[in-house]
Length: 194
Image (cartoon, rainbow, N blue to C red; front, side, top):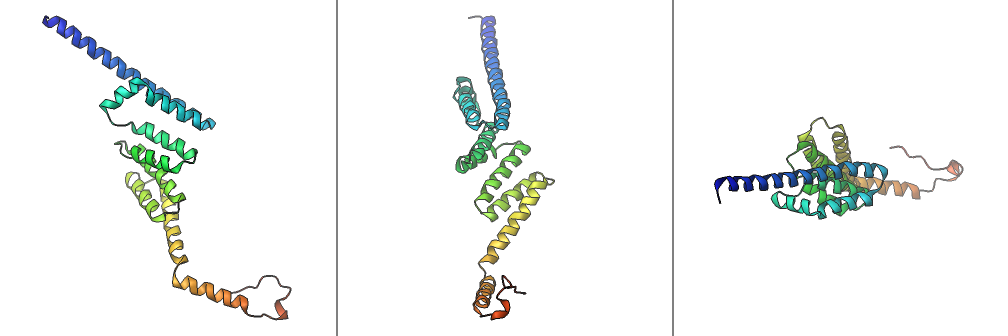
């Protein structure tokens, strides 16, 4: 073969792969756009099915061989699983999305994962996650507010099982057992001041 034919074949193959990559990128963008619409309409199963169709398409599979899993798709799958109340799958998808280099997407994935952790009453781990979000975006008001809530919840959870709390509850129970006589018969609940 001559040099011109080799260059033509190379350019033809290169253009084919570029067109294939562009079409795959378009399908990804189109799917993500339609996902937002389906989620807003509450059609979560349909949105999850469209992601599955995208991931099962041959073009996406070819693109996946050259790069790691798409963090935007993982994030959207996490959102859908959260809305479907499948916390375990949602947490897995959010962790995949956290591996991105995009700081905005990473912060959103960490924030949503922290919300899942907070619903399981693991206040200290959720607080650590909210701290990570604030390291990325120090002006995130919701993360600051939720971090304060987690610290307050952790503090209340720790004092709930403290000896002082138990002693106070024992004193309240003891006061309820004291006969108050006829003076308080019609006054409703007993009022105790501390």
